[in-house]
Figure: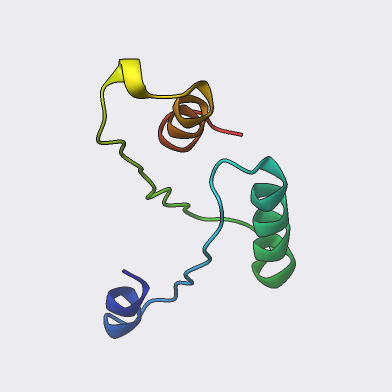
Length: 73
């Protein structure tokens, strides 16, 4: 995505992080603001899947799935 924006003459950065980790979110936003002064747009493009029945899914697996796919830290 960032490469396509650059090719079109725009500016973008790719900054990976563990979306379920609130500390990493804070560090990422702090780094963006320190470098650019503000955030214009933020694309949250994360998703994980479990290929098993709900009955076979542990509480830890369910929490991780929910935290990545649904919850905003």
